[in-house]
Length: 578
Ligand code: TTP
Ligand code: MG
Image 1 (cartoon, protein in one colour):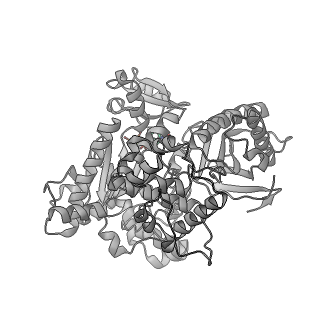
Image 2 (cartoon, rainbow, N blue to C red; image 1 turned 90 degrees about the horizontal axis):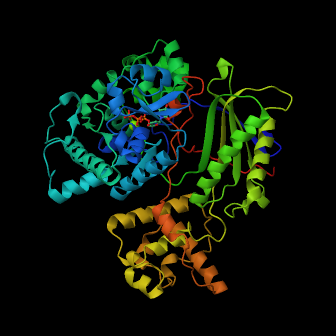
Image 3 (cartoon, rainbow, N blue to C red; image 1 turned 180 degrees about the horizontal axis):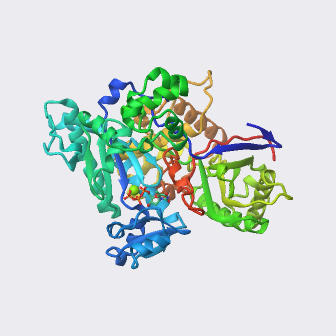
């Protein structure tokens, strides 16, 4: 990576191989993963469902959601009439002249609904990982075990939904039994999404993320499928193209094709030594494991997004005036979202994709820079010059990639704010804030700060959820451990803190809290009630969008195909001053 005057130059291959499969830390052993129960949920015709909720009179009509000249999705009424996802508008209208088309270029309603879905799932199970806008993984292993313990077996011996390949379950087999209970939980999740949010979904139940995702679309819409270990190979071999396997992107697919490997079966039976020689040991092993349906990757609970981004795809943008106009539009949306998020960005990034050359179809170039300190404190103050200053920075980044005298033709511009941090002095996102939220009713009443509705003792699931928030905060605000820190168990806790909750916190968090209380004592400043309590409770931590399997959204199937939905997950660094 080359540094240019405080900017980071970065060239990205958009369609990239995903670290789908678990070589990461925290991955479980193959033995343990066999006994897991994972549910994958995918909302039906997501954008179209959101539109039908907004306009119920359209439910029975064929409905498509249009971005530029593409129908990005359509409801199942339209699908029954031959319209397909990602069909050109022209073709969709030929298939279905009565198709109602709604513009879906403003992603706000989809994004908001998407977070509500994840939030609802998190209330039912703490281990939820978002994947894109309309998919979530839930690791229900522990819930299943608890249910089995409580009822000394499953409450209901019938599977909820389908069993892949229509296989019969053996109730003497522990794995079958756990998957059976998993199917009941999946059904409960789906019912809850339907009754609370009015959204229908499909689910897959299997022993790992890969298989749960692969099986969930077997019956659509509004259905679910359980996969028994005995059917793993059938599912994989019936997939068709290797590209259906998340983790095998088009680049890898092409490399495999040149080796004559086109199907799952080919990959499974290809001599390992040759594959290792051609692709290198890690990739070869990873691919072959995927081809056998092996995936140890844990369901990683999603935290708040690490960056917020907006992008615009177009047929052509070839003048600085157009660039400026587009950047301003993107910035306005981003500033609105930042305002809702409450954190402050420290890094600004611009990405673009040039239009013409076929060889650069998937290629984005980007530059980023740290936001200058004088701009940082102007966020969230309705500063009218902020937009102009940011625009100026973006244009400088733009000119680093496209020198003034060089003609250009772009088909995508993307702006993102990353390195998001709570503003100084904010208690909203501090770990202390979350800890205070889980204080006991008695203590809260004594403190007199909380609203009546919050004086209830938190339910177990709420407590778990909040505890997770504490952990997420900790993860995003690493603290250095001081060797001279006092033993947290020996310290005098402030009266508004529940000792039980405190004792359950990780040591680092305890130490940070102690440090906060000490400095509070030193300045004799009473703990203020966090002003944003209500908003934070309505908007729980947002999850990063997982781009790993979303590469397909970025592939410009047609000129002007819209870009990916969602916030990209990017790790940004400060790179000196701009
Ligand atoms: P999908 O889950 O692929 O599609 P879907 O939910 O509309 O339909 P299905 O019932 O088959 O699951 O994608 C989720 C949303 O993402 C979709 O509603 C529209 C959007 N999207 C894009 O913006 N670009 C794309 O290329 C695709 C495939 C989807
Ligand atoms: Mg979907």
